[in-house]
Length: 349
Ligand code: KG4
Ligand code: ZN
Image (cartoon, rainbow, N blue to C red):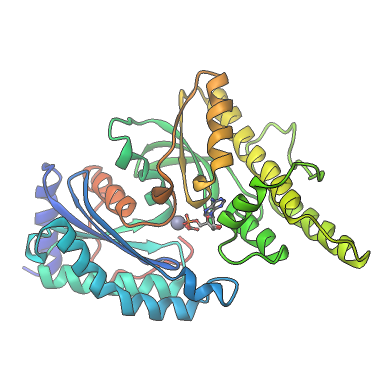
């Protein structure tokens, strides 16, 4: 019997158990992250962020990200095991993000996970990064039940999802151009603020006022799609016009006005869609979910209509491996088969 046949047998057994140790790896962008779960319980979570390295270049440089994942990953696995108080021999399944993300960055995690699962002779679960973000909600809200409605806003995705399980998510609205996080990052760059832009915009917005008119794309439309390019262009034009007139701009006011428009669209669509589809809960997911203005606005607006909001803590909104582990747990329970050793990264998943 070869590796994959043994892996299938072990996976079949895991489906009926709650107490297995799972090691999860995430390396899709600029954070190398490893986590150990025992069933649905997170035992350890370690992250090595490359933000300081990429800051110099104003954004993530793919090749540099890959190299730093290679430097970090082995030590992180050791740390995650130590923090969880187990040895690698106790790991019964390995999970890894195989897409979407930067190809070279993903490949580091995928290659490491394949080697580790082969060496330990355990199943390997290939996990979709975006679904991982959704499952971050179960870490702090273990009593959450399907179906629920999810607003997912990250650097690469902006979607409204009806979530019935790992294998059953329906997109009811999505961005037609830039992702929300991408817009935060681009606007920050125009304002001369460092990478990553989201937290910078948030900090500057706190000192500013919402006084600069911004477009409200799709306002009054029946669909639930998003568009960020118009808002982003409005900021760019505003800044360039001020520059050409030799006028100073108030960065705080620009940040505040942009953030208001960007979060309004997220909250408007999410609450309108949840109401129309009959959901009583909205779960937040993705890096932009760390934005306090968004969290407060979503909570306030949803409450008005008797909708509960699940807000994962900020460190669970941004990239981490616990969410990949949690998604893998549900994937196993739903009968998603393990990957074989020919697993490849899929940057456009
Ligand atoms: O989910 P994530 O960590 O990685 C992706 O899968 O993309 O999201 C990263 C994105 C970046 O665009 C970053 O600027 C944004 O999330 N972000 C924020 C905040 N923190 C991170 N955006 C707005 N406000 C924040 N506090
Ligand atoms: Zn992410």
